[in-house]
Amino acid sequence: MDDAVTLPIKSLAKTPVKTIELNDLILCADTGKQYRYIGKGLLKSFDVWPLIKQKQGRDAAAIAVQQEQMMQDAQAKAEDKARHNDLLKVEMTNRDRRLVTTRPEKDKKSSPNPKAARAQKPAKPEKPKTKAELEAERKKAKQDAQDCARSAEIKAATDALVARLGYDKSGYLGKPDAEDEEVQR
Image (cartoon, rainbow, N blue to C red; front, side, top):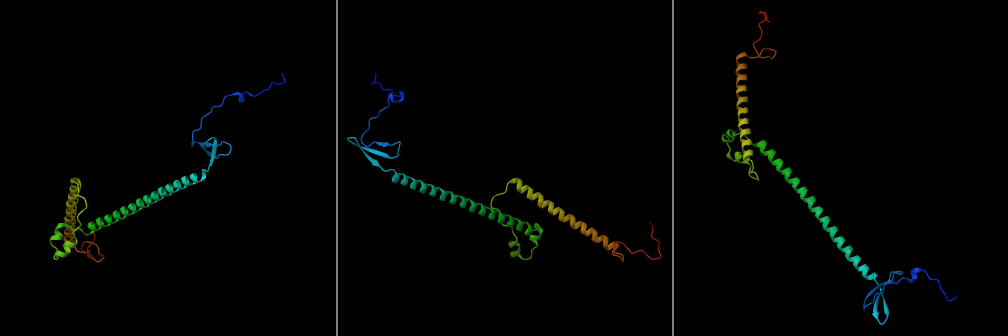
């Protein structure tokens, strides 16, 4: 019984064996190196680092291109937004100018200088207005004309009242009180 040897069970387990073909790559688990089978039981050391570095270089170049594209897209968006804001400011300024320089229709007809009347014309809008917008503008113009006529009536009535009553010495509306007469309350 001296010839008996005790072995662990793990060593008795079968390990799978794969047949190696010509030019197969084999990875050494201990060192991390790769080998290529060149036939007749010979393995040739295969250096992987140049290939890995090439792949890393290609990946880095692709990432750099993507980052550059993203930067250009961001710049383009920022420029578009700035251009849009500038156009809005110009449009608002033009609208404000049109509102300030626009006069009622009767003033334009009585303008002695036709060139001045042409210069005061508002610029044509870039997009056609809807029926609701046109109706609102007509109502506003009509209301403005009515307000102007009403203020002219009020001014004429005030002028007539002042002409009839006059002002007293202290600047109040009405005839001055006579010194001899008693003021009735």
